[in-house]
Image (cartoon, rainbow, N blue to C red; front, side):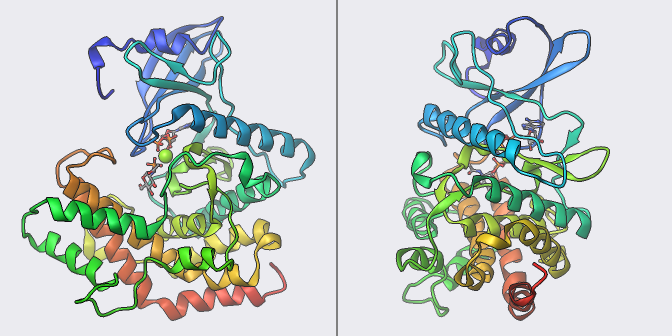
Length: 382
Ligand code: ADP
Ligand code: GN1
Ligand code: MG
């Protein structure tokens, strides 16, 4: 647990979310980069669990609004599921309430905690296994988009202003860079050049990348919709018995945005077979077969609400979100690792390199990727 460890009493905190059962065990859980997640085991005849999370308020400045959004979305999905015929079991997170009926608990240090139902018999993966799993990941995002497609974006608050607005990350990067003096290592130099090459600026030679989606949004080519915000591979839960995706979790960033941020993020994460924590940079490759699998799964449920323009921007979204995440990691490295959790000081630098290598691989396969997208657009079977 981070921060004021000595004064937090996790058992007493967990007890806020359960009335009858005593807590028998609390253990750190999962490998998220933002919140502190624990698996709570209840002392009951059948081993029952729930998830306890300390919300990262350095990132989410208004945790009450985050919880309101999550409650609105999960209730909407639960309701939709009663009237929707999915061809499988689908689980939606349930927000647990405290004894005084709140959807969060604030401890005496001011930290915000929440309880969430545990999706039993499930697992998440940090690294994609194969095309079958890719189809499942795509299916899970498509199902999520489908289930929230009739919830108005106006119903949810913007809980993380600037999230996925690449030009703002670029501004932030320049601000931080202006105040720091990073070591001139090969890795740092590679990142500086990589960003420069893809930004507008005097010495930079490529067309600026960062504005593509924001410009399309401003011109009305891409509509404001609700998005998940963070559909990377380890935020999808798979049924341990059937290996099918059964839920998409980590709903902190559900808010108004573009579905392209989600499609781009899902593909940049799911098409990287060595995962985002690797240090073997020469092995990093965006895998077109996995891209085909993810899009197949996604479009099998989401085709109905995609417009012609939506297809046109999918390639740009994949390239942009990989670049953007590299930029976010590199900026955080320069800023002293204040946003993403790290295990060692260069961790965010290493992560940035992974995303930049992935961006290069995406760029070098532009034709192939565009043709996969195009085939789906014209195929009557999807
Ligand atoms: P973070 O925002 O830090 O990424 P997550 O909400 O994604 O936190 O949780 C971290 C990990 O914990 C997930 O990747 C998943 O493995 C596990 N997890 C979280 N919530 C649940 C849940 N309700 N049921 C089962 N596993 C969960
Ligand atoms: C964070 O919380 P987690 O680990 O699922 C981040 C995402 C990044 C991801 C990269 C709120 O996701 O935007 O893509 O790390 N979440 C937030 O691993 O910033
Ligand atoms: Mg997560």
